Image (cartoon, rainbow over all chains, first blue to last red):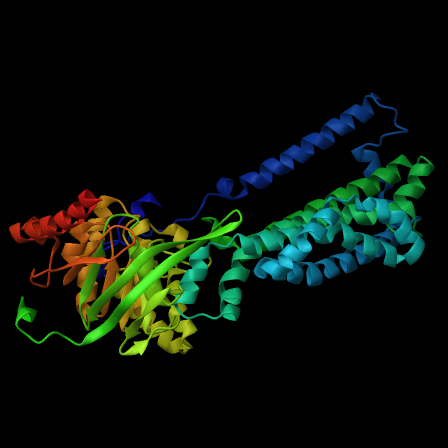
Length: 281
Length: 268
């Protein structure tokens, strides 16, 4: 866009004037999909190597599965083992926990970013809890909230809320003071400045925080279920792992990886939607 | 030159003994540095006033105070006879950094002040269309700020200020971040745009040539803390085109202002 150096004189802007400075042309297919195609190739290569290692018997098949055997295990996993039920339980725990993260973490982060007093009061606590290995709390959570959904929701929340709080706070703090000054000069009040300047400016930070929270949330669900549960993907890992059902075990692992990737893609799409102004698309 | 014999226009903005200081915290102490020390100044209705002075003299601080965002240590401003107590729709500012909201298109950025004033969507659209044409951004209405060059961002910045039709336009070094060529071009554009409505304007700049070219009167501030050193009337006829910068009278006026700033510096 270097040819936008000077604007046309207003006279040239009318209809029938010389061709405008802005020209639009379609982007080629390769340019549009190259990242996707290369990414898919990378995954295919990894799977191929894994399959090769398993087929050549380099590693004991008792400890590692192979892509082919994982696919073969699918009917048993969904049939005899009712994997869909485990997915439903884990998804419920994850979504409830993340819902709590969103409805409390974002507002709290906004408050802490906007009001200096709130921030100074809570910053040490937030930093301490962010740094604490919350995993240490799992036994006590299971003890107090039981082996059901409740303890996992609490664990997801405790593990995932801090990056959202910290990023949202940073997002508000990071706003260019010149923009606030601009809004004030035009007579905008605090509420309008919050809505038209602070909030949109912090959206990219909030999404970055959510991205971090999602991966922590998945970890929390699995770890919580590994420790004490009666259903869920973590519970399933425990059950199949202990009896060397390696193919079914790895099926669940690959499933978790896929979930992580899909959620990441969803957040990327959301990011592109709400902060498309940041990059020249 | 025509105004020389006529009765001076009524006062639009009056500064009366304005003193401004900055408080900074240094370890265990709070230090107050006086930046502007007792400025008395009358800005006439419909005039273009430029303020120049050595860099760091407090020009921009003085300007920010007119927006009502800075507490004064002493004195005050009167706009149309009423004391300024805070920001208001009777003043509009063109900022040194364009301060465009990056998530808004050019069109929505220009409409910002109108939104604050609660104008209807139809009125906003009509006003913005008019201004897009005036500042030459009609083709870029739906672009985002990062897609614009520096000069175009400043056009949008100017259009946003003009949109609210405030009685007093404040221009705080609006072209300081532009390269020399774009800057000259924008000066020409500004006189053209200004001539369309002749809104009372105050320009803060460190470019003497820019001040002389644009202004009816050039106010020279002394070094910090700022005071009014001298006011130089600019009798170049309007409309002015950039070519006037090569005229002997222009050079003479430029020299006068330059001497005033330099003699201040030597006295220190």
